[in-house]
Length: 403
Image (cartoon, rainbow, N blue to C red; front, side, top):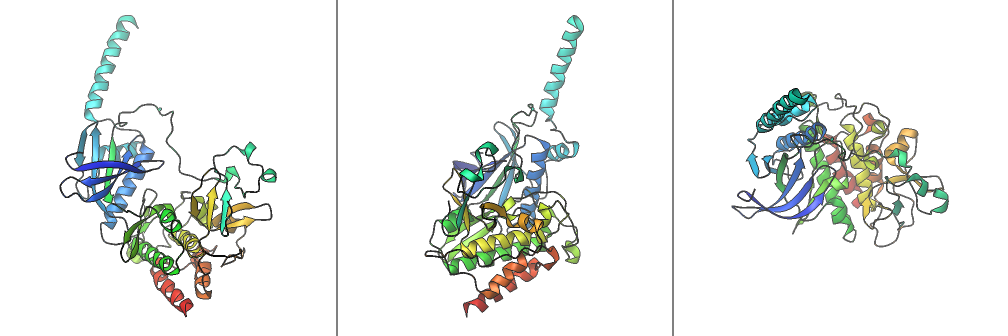
């Protein structure tokens, strides 16, 4: 690794991997290096999907994170670059067989140990602020989540849908030391939550973010890539003198549509329930098959939250997160929009929110933008505008409201 890249410090950690800030050894260019340990076939499949999606996007859009290279770790100090268009065959085989496939050295060692064991046996016989509300963490014990003795809006624990964490009880396997290292462009502004919420709200900045995200998703859908986990955490920001440049990232849950050739992404349907609950579409919540239009719903939630600065804070933390929601009755239960619309498809969303507004909140979106948001958040996927039309509609709505 030292011959190619220098690791400086850890800058992020998730359920599946760790991200480091680093530099290219030859040029000194700052990069982000993501280490994905290949511990089991399920994780490996997500990593290969992410690698495939990032290779497909190449460096062809300014608002999609760029992949510089990918390295395969085969030992404690053994790394080799993967050639463009090539996938590591042992990892592909692990996914297909549903079990970790050993390296040739490991297979030989295991064979020797097995032979020795056979001989031995023969001889002897794995917080509420304006538009901000608080919710309890999803993993909290139900016995400590009684709505009657806590003024904070809560979410029922049994509603949580999150990516599965690595099991600590997995038996050791031959690929434990192997990993994929993705070398990507570095974004110095953090994720969209960190960037926007660390600054006073500014309508022009918010509009720029919304337009850029429209452009990114239209580009991905034009390639047949359905992201399936669009949220502020998965949007990174590069700070430039001309303003923020946002980058859609994290393609571990992405899928490729077979219908990209005829341009109708609404024909390809998926069934896996995945994503983050505050941004999941109603049809995903309901366990129905869904199309690329689920991404449009996720964008609608993000746009509403960005334009009105709607946030929530998980209890026990101090970090706000952008996300729109529905308050369920006077008890203060907090419901994701998708869940609320799945339970009641005729639910009328109040855009803009009818909360008490005060500085430094931005002005509420105008009538044209509110109409567009309602269309993006329609309970019927076919009523949502497709990605290729969305960018033009956003520009038109923002321009109309500016007058």
